Image (cartoon, rainbow, N blue to C red; front, top):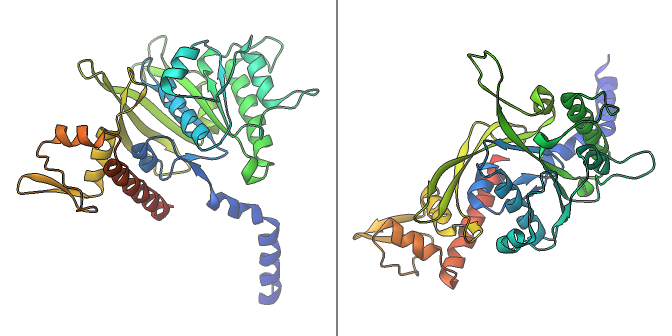
Length: 324
């Protein structure tokens, strides 16, 4: 092919596949945790399928509700599909979550059909910014729907979701968060003792997989350390992890613990004459010598603490833009 003709052909192909460039302009939503935003290099990717999986009482629902609260605070719409009937109004009020739409379907198949739509009713893809599905383990297929097998139901569901979502403009795409649980394998399986609902079908379609574990539970301080690792990702660096300090009693992140982690990560603090100094804001006179004292000070809601928080937020955003 002559060089001129080859150049024209390539240019025409690029115009036809202009949508490919949208992949590199992916919008991300804040998670509600700066440490997790740092791990995910900006936050929750818009229009992707995210799986939160782990053992019971690990913090999966807590993390999903933290996503929901952050989305609602930024003016986004969120639907929580509660197949396990686990949420209560009192619990949501304690978490400070307002404006969350909660749907309690009669069956799991009804929940799936509500999302993807039917021949007579449109679905919810493109209607909500985020849909949280709690949980994959509660899917009980109908014998007359999708062939009856759980893996086939999940496969058809996610194929439909991806197909409908990719046809939407970037601003209208829906993020799907799937909560899933670890299961013990039945039978003689010496190499891999654990599995998850949905098997390999789910793993093929998920673009971001977050493993959620309870790393530590401090009953005296009433703090739960949630460990988050990334075994699979198409939106950020995989095989990384972080720890999120959370108070179940107060229903919030322990910001002092989180900010202390980030101050050390970005080398923004050091000790001079035995006292901590915040290098980016030397006007703040701490007169603090111990780690626990600094964490307690950072956890307060004051003008100086908000300044430090905003500085850390900008640092996380700069880090995410460099990674992207």
